[in-house]
Structures are given as structure tokens and as C-alpha cells.
Amino acid sequence: MKADVYDLVIKNGLIVNADVSFYADVAIKDGKIVALGSFFRAAQEIDAKGLYLLPGGIDIHTHLEMPFMSTFSSDNFESGSKAAAMGGTTTVVDYAMQEKGDSLSAALKKWHEKAANKCHIDYGFHLGLTDIDENILTELESLTQEGVSTVKLFMAYNNALRCPDIKLLEVFNALKKLQILSMLHCENGDIIEYLSKKLVNDGNTAPIYHSVAHTAECEAESINRAAIYSKIFDLPIYIVHLSSKEGLQVIYDHFKRGVRIFTETCPQYLILDDSLYNKEFLEASKYVMSPPLRGKDSIEALWKALACGMINVVATDHCPFFLKQKELGKDDFTKIPNGAPGIETRLVLIFSEGVRKGRITKEQFVKCCCLNPAKLAGLYPSKGAVAPNFDADLVLFDPNKKWQIMKSHLHENVDYTPYEGIQVTGAVVDVLLRGQWLVREGSFVGGKITGNYLRRTKVI
Ligand code: URP
Ligand code: ZN
Ligand code: ZN
Image (cartoon, rainbow, N blue to C red; front, side, top):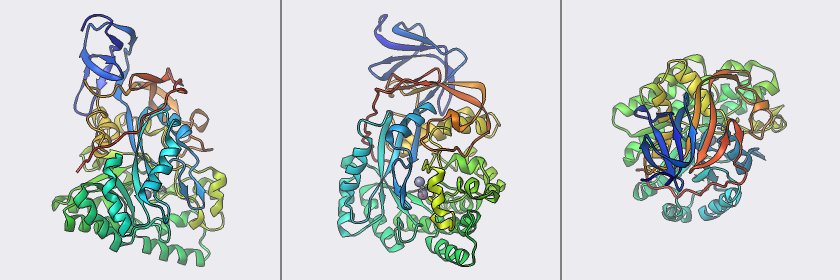
């Protein structure tokens, strides 16, 4: 191409992809990466010397403005997507939740209304199935035409989101024909209900008892059941937010026998441990999420599994609640809204705790935060790599900048971060969405930019 045909050229950066890293200039036109190489000229050129050029982060597990446990998660698509962009994430796949009695199209409509013209980054939806009957099983057939190639099923949250096993089997039967991937919240809802009631009746109402009720065995047992169902139907499954070494062992055992299981974990399970539940109510309630935080042995096991490819994706499960909302459970841990923020801090935490501490390579970091999420959510090959024909979703990342995470620096609509005070190395400098600047030199400049709804392709 001759001089000035490109809209933008980013020069001198180290391109980090999931397979290999190399120096090259990136030429962008009409929102796409059109060439990698050198000696390009363009209307606009920027120098990325000393910086990494990463594919935009892809977070395929978020809950924006979700009605849950008598309240709503506190980030909407506007605030949550701005925070995501500030942290280097350019695509989210959020859970469109079916409310009791709703059709799937009604659930999707609600989520489209929440996101359209508000979300600053590209977005898609998984369908969270919570009320299944014959009509819903039939309606599943229309999902892929709506651009939805994944559904979530909850094996926990009795009397709320939970899908009973008999229905789970019916859904699996339908998904097998439709080639839709199921994303499973694996915890044994009955054990949790039984233990929670017993604990509360005995006067054990503090947040720490949330982690006692949600034992690692609950997770392991539920993963085992899901894997057996997966085997019966010869249907791959995706386990969301894996938290424990016990659950990991079960995945490994089934994996060896040929069951196709994809696994996601989240920064909280790789970084924070269950000693945080020993604090007083408000402090401990910050970490009440399902599944809960585990011990340091689980943390190290999860990092090793990420390094060897047993864990495919790091997503956030971003589900923030203000401390005022957490107070709903001050006399009873079962009433504390489950969830924590994290949409803004994922890339920096995984880079700092993972790459800089030598647990994973920078290419593995890109694999679990960008490429694999793109592939498993049906967004590949337009998202997930810095390569010709991919969307120009790019993060200019300083691998050496040291800073301390503090809520006062973040943009999530909530009054705390679980990572307060953690020293990190690595910082997002610039972020581009399809060639347009969302973040420049650490400041949000994407106020007028709205993301596209992504029609996702089948992944299985
Ligand atoms: O505690 C959590 N994880 N809240 C969000 C809902 C879910 O289970 O993913
Ligand atoms: Zn879940
Ligand atoms: Zn979740």
C-alpha cells in the first residue's frame, strides 16, 4: 500500500500474542489491523517504544446491572464498560439472566436495552437459564440466530437460580443438537442449603460461615456430576469460576478419561485467600462470593493448572455490590449479596502476579485473558490476537510501571476493591477499540464511543 493509506500506525511496540512475541509496526485501517511489518506511513503515527502491544482483553464472565439476592449489581453497562476499558478490556460477554416466567427472547431484550448505546466496549450475551420448561427447550433453537452460542446453568442457589439436575439433563440433550456450549456454576446447592441452615440456626451468622457452607467438596462433587452428564451426552462443558484444588483434581481425572472440559478461573481465586474471612463483618463481606476464596494451596494449584493449560480462561465474574448492599446480610451471611468487583484489574493482576512472578509467560497471559476467551465465546477470528484481519482492539501496556491498586484510582461503580493496597508491576497506557481511542495515557477518552453487539458463532 502506498503512503498515507492507513488511518493509524503504531510503531516500535513488542507485539505479544498467545503463541509468540515479536517487534513489528501495526497498520490500522477502518477499525481493522491490516498489516504487521515496518516502514508504514499513515495519517497518524504513534510510538510504542518500550511498550507491549496486546490484543484487547476479553472478559467472558460479567454481571452488569444484574438483579440478584434482593438487589442489583452496582455497575451498569456504562460504568462497567468504562472501568473495563481503563483496565484494558475491550470486549465483555455478560450474562443475560432469564427471570422466572420470562421467555429467552424477553431476557435478551432486557439485556439489549441495558447495553445498547451505553456500553463503551464491544459486548455479547450468554443466556443464564433459570426457569426451564418445554417452551424454553424449544426456544433454545433460536439462540444462535440471536448471536448467542453459550448458556449458563447454575447447580447452586437453591430456590433461586438453580437448575435441578433433571432439567439440566433435558437442557444438555437440547444443547447437544444445537451445538451450544454450557457454562456451569458448579457447587452442590443441597449441601450448601443444608449447611447454611444449620449454621444460621446454631447462631453462626458471620461472613466466614459462607465459606464453611460452600465447602470445596461442594464444588468438586458438582463438577464430577457435570462431567458425568457431559460424558453421557458427549457434550463439552465449560466450568466457570473454578476456585479449589479439589475441583481441579476432579477436572483432571475426567480430562484424562477424555471428557472435554474447558475451565475458567478468576483473579480472586488466584490471588486472595480465605484468611480474609476472619476480619470483621464489613471487611469480610467484601469477599463473600460463590464459590468462596480458598486456601493458599488452592491458589498455587490453580496457577500451575493455568501454566500447563488445564485452565483455559481467566475471567472476572465481576459482580460488584456497595458495602451498604453487603449489609443486607449483617445478621445472616446467607443474605449477603454474593459477588465482588474486578472488571478493571484483571489484566494488571494476572500480568503482575503471573508473568512478573514467573508463574506464567507473557504469551500465556495473552492466551488466558484474550485468545482463549475469544475462541470459547465464539469471537475468533475477529478478536483475540494482534494480526491482520483482526479488529484493531489493542492495549499499549507498560510492563515495568510499578503502582499500588487503590479504589480511589479505579472506575468501577462500587466503594471498594478486593485488591486494595496490592503492589503491581505493569500498567495499561492506551486502549483502542476497533482503532478508536478509549484510553490515552491512562485517561478515559471514549465517552462518545459505543461498542457493537457481537453476534457470536458456535464454538462446539
Ligand atoms: O458470587 C458470585 N459469583 N456472584 C455472581 C453470580 C455467580 O454465581 O456467578
Ligand atoms: Zn456462578
Ligand atoms: Zn458469575
